[in-house]
Image 1 (cartoon, helix red, strand yellow):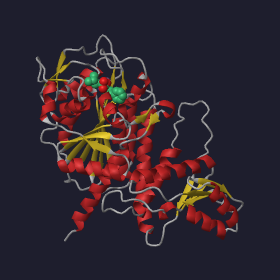
Image 2 (tube, rainbow, N blue to C red; image 1 turned 90 degrees about the horizontal axis):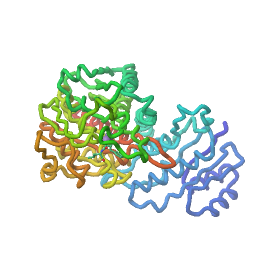
Image 3 (cartoon, protein in one colour; image 1 turned 45 degrees about the vertical axis):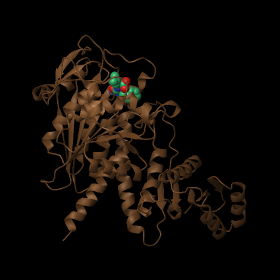
Image 4 (cartoon, helix red, strand yellow; image 1 turned 120 degrees about the vertical axis):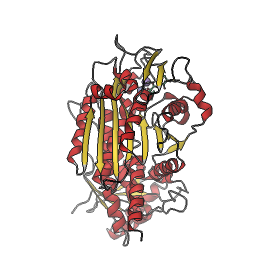
Length: 483
Ligand code: BES
Ligand code: MN
Ligand code: ZN
């Protein structure tokens, strides 16, 4: 059978060249290309060799991933249908001190890179570009690593499905991706084993006293939805991991209207919600033996005669009151009520995910999400999950000193804390609704999508969230089998 390409280290590529009777030709091509990923077309059943330099990576897992991304880019450029992946023999740095980069980790990264490179969103092109992507990849597993590689393929495929859902939802424009659209998409997850979905309408939210949540949607003609998906992979009595996502399907700023430049990107303001749906899908597809709930707080933030005004005071489901000094700080108004709602699940941990502040982009750029936690273990676990998946999150402080910026003369708190430390004061606002919960907050404003020529959703932090859940599932498995 003919194979589109074989992806291997330079050393292995040379050896394969010898075995296929084109050794000299391959050696010459490698000489021409001493440092970079080289694509070598050869007249054999294997049509191309993609030769990857194994050196110069040092101890930075990020550099390893970059090298893998280069290899995948070369494969993509070939427009072949299938590939044999022999890169697991490339040495890789420890993803965590003391944790070896094993076949499972390497395979996961290979699949992650392929999934990121091959993803396309042509839903709204009248002529979709022809499919030139890889349809099949075989991973060469060294003896003794087959189980690990198989497990990595299972986990990697589940993650890929979760990522695709997150990216598809986020890339859809706001005239398509409304709160109702999100509710319908999440309702489809109920077809998976052990998944059930509940959608709350505005009237039900009003009954629960969600005055902050409802103040955001007031200016919009499109009804808000509170969407809750449950995956029951553990036993009935296991406390669930609850993920809460900001789902602002379009953020104009409301009466505190945003400037026009790049406002189209505010269709991505529901990336947090999309990511918690994606993580739940991945957990369900991987059949993790734990319970997970994903809550999507979905609403549109519009200016109109019915919209909230600066200075309006609303009361939250928790009973605390909020003075809305800026209607563009709407994410925290949705999330504070969604966090209070999350208590009904008696969670073992709550993680909210939100494209919450422009200040987060100023602080960390596109490389890391901001990580806040009121529980040290939870913070550590999430940071570790981010490092292992190259979907990094960086710890930020929740010190009381910052809480003072939220003082209001007229209500229990204001919804903004002024310009200094904007991502932190937003997190401090949320922390007031997480009392007694084991809680963390990820501000993904810089990481959830890319601007510019490659504008589009990244699917982050689905890899981090899924890894966090995988790690908890593994712990649960160990505890269950302990004597
Ligand atoms: N969705 C935005 C945050 C955002 C802006 C993310 C730009 C990514 C890029 C959020 O709702 C918002 O508008 N936040 C305000 C808060 C401010 C009014 C305190 C912001 O960051 O300017
Ligand atoms: Mn806003
Ligand atoms: Zn927003």
